[in-house]
Length: 117
Length: 350
View 1 (cartoon, rainbow over the protein chains, first blue to last red):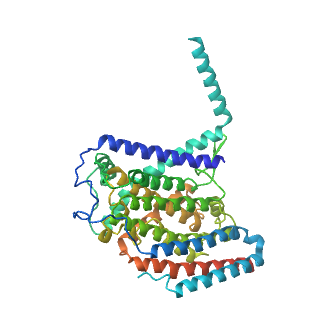
View 2 (cartoon, rainbow over the protein chains, first blue to last red):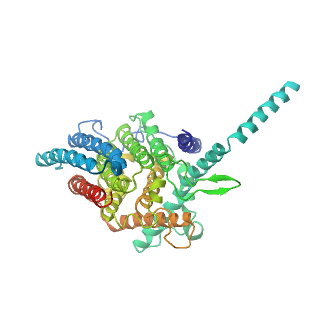
View 3 (tube, rainbow over the protein chains, first blue to last red):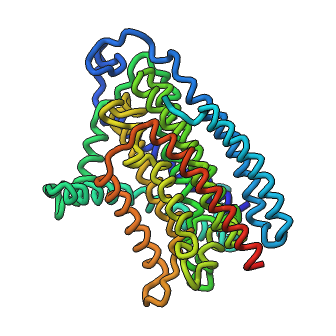
């Protein structure tokens, strides 16, 4: 656990430095807001609508594909560490697993899930 | 007043006793703080290096006025940014707006904690290890923490209430999760070769030859994915100036703006260090008479220069090509490389 204590020390140092920088810039920086300055930047034009609107569904589908493949990668990490002991059995098992995922991958590709237009 | 001195004495004795019994803990803590501060002070030097090299690549001088060779330029910029007004536009989500740059910097520094850069050595009977922390899940930890850095960019994009920021945040999340697959899968072949997740073990496994010689494809895939993960050109779509102004940090000013760059440059160093550890043999010098840490630093420096070199060489690729490149070319190549590596390992080197 001491190793994780050291890691948290890194985070603490980061928080201290970040806090100090933000505090310093708040103290040192000027502060004179105006209605125009507080508008969202849109190349000098007054924004017409809120930014939080609809966005392409592509981003959501990519996130779903990511979850499928990332779970696969999570399974592969312990397998890769233990392959020395698993030998041929582990290899065949993982080959079957990758083939099943490969079918899903080909299906996604065929249905145009990976096209971006 | 006697009881005050007594309490002070008892406290002092307790502290001395505690320190004497926990010397490794104290040494480790001091070391962690030193490394964390050092990695943060690398950032200005790296900004200077990038601007100088970019200048040379583009046949101009680059910063050369402040101090010798323009070395004072990053300091001057930092001071300038400190004195800038911090503008938070009125419709932004204030809390998330402040949180986003902090998340980027903190995750970047925490991810560097497990990077080793030399063999342990002994001073005054104490073994000093050349790493902040040696967790046995080293590489997984780096991926996990640097994956959390995506939150910073997405939060910046969402909280700004600006169309460019939102677009940049969405783009960066989609890009980074896509290339994280390639990153994780290409690192798997190295884990197959070493049978360990610890970065120290990986370097020790490369004592006779660096893994780039046996895994050139994995090296290439890992490096490409690493550039995309750090949002560097030619994969800097989240902040594509010509179309998105500045992407997810459009609304940020002053020090908070600088913190995104701090995060980006620290991530660049972490990624170069990872490539060095996984593929270039870490601190092994292969017969050259240099200190391990010098060997490591030279390799990381070289990779950082390659990062800058790529930025000045390649134009930014289009977003649809970026995504199809990641999903249709890199991902199958990764799986292929993984299957070939594991088959060779099981059949020829059981």
